[in-house]
Image (cartoon, rainbow, N blue to C red; front, side, top):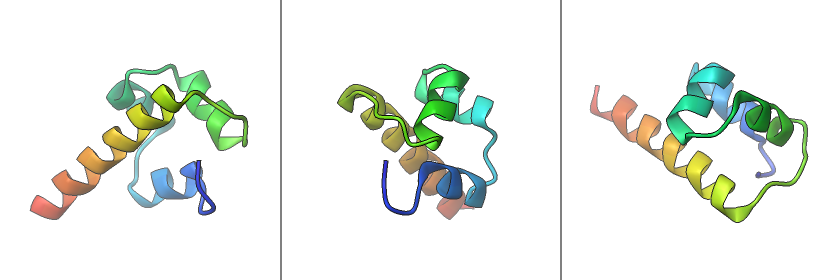
Length: 62
């Protein structure tokens, strides 16, 4: 996903794999595969990115 890694980003936001999967409308197994370095479709990357952006913007409002 990026040089930093999805797992690092997810953990820094205190999000569980299942929570990110629900937010991105993908399976927890897909989140695990991405975190292990497997490739994924652009559509999946977009879903994860949008979910993380939403979470970050929500955290900044607090």
